[in-house]
Length: 149
Image 1 (cartoon, one colour):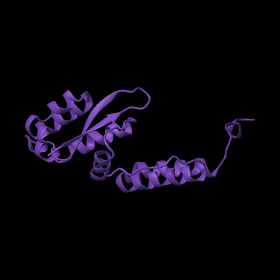
Image 2 (cartoon, helix red, strand yellow):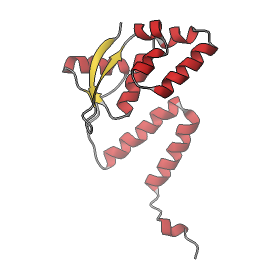
Image 3 (cartoon, one colour):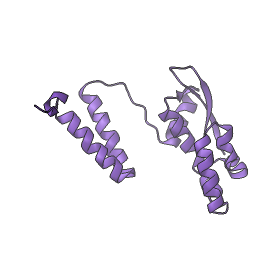
Image 4 (tube, helix red, strand yellow):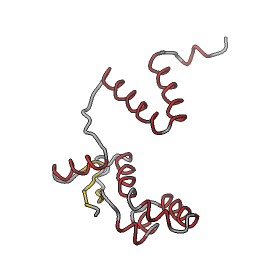
């Protein structure tokens, strides 16, 4: 059973409802759920996959949809705006950890750990991003160094 948690975007003040847990709504209504939540691209993607898999996708994604939706909202900048207990439960179930604002060397540690986590999920793309980011942090090359003389 999905549980509701309030979300807010700090810059715009826009408030939305997020959900975590099994999505009965997606199981029953399928690709209409992203339509109601304002995700057109996700709607088209789910519709196409549901048609190709003859509806089996709808049963499988019912277990995952709310977590994916919440992840997308958090990546867009939304933050939890409910009671502390509800926020902590949602973070635990979704797999989000509280991060303190850090600067300097600690920022680099968070930056590298983010790419190492990504490396486990998206090996080829994350590896190339890790290499590029490592080079940009380790080397301080100016644009003028590459100019033709």
